[in-house]
Length: 119
Length: 116
Image 1 (tube, rainbow over the protein chains, first blue to last red):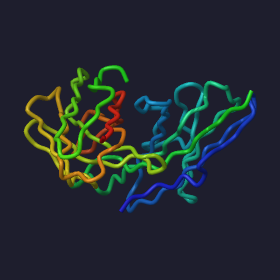
Image 2 (cartoon, rainbow over the protein chains, first blue to last red):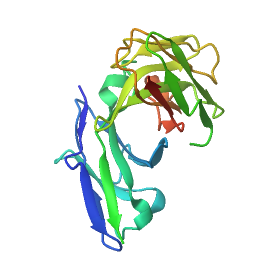
Image 3 (spheres, each protein chain N blue to C red):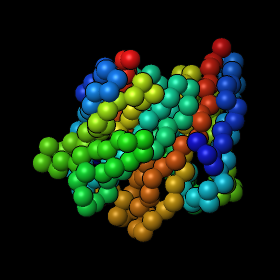
Image 4 (cartoon, each protein chain N blue to C red):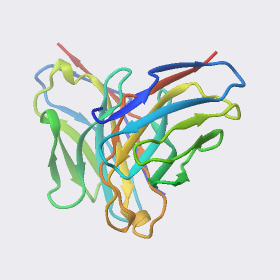
């Protein structure tokens, strides 16, 4: 089974400071990892993904994420936060071992982290 | 949200009624998905389809039904058997890669269903 944990329900950061939103995962095989952002009453927007290769992944709007296999983590980061970054952030995982044989599909999502950037 | 449309944006249902949520995509994606979002619970997979005329149950399929008669369309029916249907429903689509693996999922704007 695959699972994702986002240990913080809410993260508060002052504008201009660096931000980190934490995500840990559990899979049987190799993970595909994703970050999405959701603004109120909107769908999810794709930010970035890790498939293989470089552990530091760069995505949209200046966000990046670092894949750490030993810690089974995929934390989302940004060097300087903007007020407009305030939103709900979701980490998601797909276990590639499950799909090589045509098994069940779909992403497993964390419960989300509210990011609040204070002016 | 571009390329995937969901309608209506808001939907109200009386208890005992079936309702159908629309999802259309013009991205030429083979795979389509339905998720349910409840506050504090993240997203949970209801149904998915990787090809026309074929679909699979997700984690919480009870009380829901789908069809995939066209590549572009994947409507979701919330039946009266779904005991707690009030939620935000999200449709997504993706390409399908080798060995059934799928790529990034792109989401529509969502439909908020409220049972009166």
